[in-house]
Image (cartoon, rainbow, N blue to C red; front, side, top):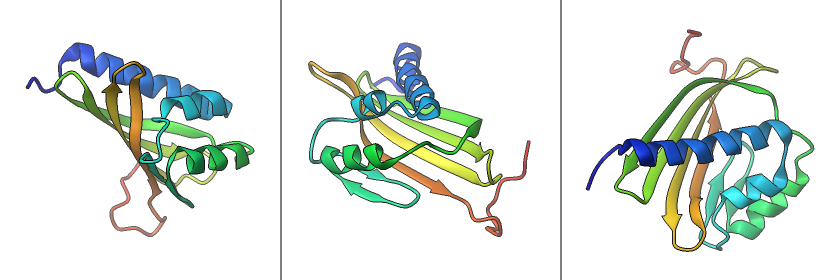
Length: 134
């Protein structure tokens, strides 16, 4: 198995970038389409624990807008041709809090790259692990 095939990294990055643009625009159609349409899909957010695409879609429909954020670091690892992990470190521009977001992506037959699991979290201002501004 090849790790970090540049072509696979580029494909995962394209999914990542499309998702980030959709977050900024609060484009629920694209956000939902990025996730695997399956009851086994999981998304743990800052304020929510969601099991299944129906729960994820219901959450998305309740969001008026997402807090603006600035990317600090993106890290992507690909394993073979059909599995990738994306990691985002960002700063919320409204609070200055540091956020982290991980997406597990799989290339599925007939539907292409889909997020099958995601986790979003924020560091508390007093968290000793808080990363200083770069």
